[in-house]
Length: 174
Image 1 (cartoon, one colour):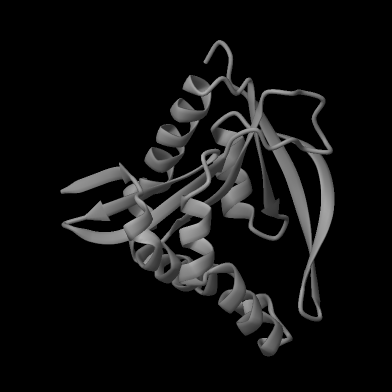
Image 2: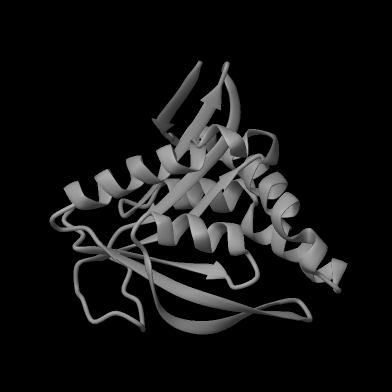
């Protein structure tokens, strides 16, 4: 049985662990600088950082469970402008990660649905995200769900630099 619920501050350790594991599953093979990767994991997915993020009014997380096991999460930041989009009422889909053993269950799509509904209800007219350009599975997923490319940028972690595509989707009328 699957359940998706809005995360609470008490879920910080759970999200931190899911974040570390899912990021490692998806991207660790791309890194030439293991120290940079480990530093990134330690800072981005620390329990304290996630707890602070959960305490911000414009930041929301959802956690997906299958048979009471946490298997994925999503993160939305409302009121998050993008340099690629000229809009004031915009949210950012910052993360959707699902453990690789559960990808075939379409949990990412359901997490995205919850997040988009929440953004729409919160007054966001558009939602944007950044996706690693080598992640063709994610790009196809977002395109299939109505996102269009709006720009490109780079992001560095340690000594490694990665090319990203910014994508956006209008929420009104959907």
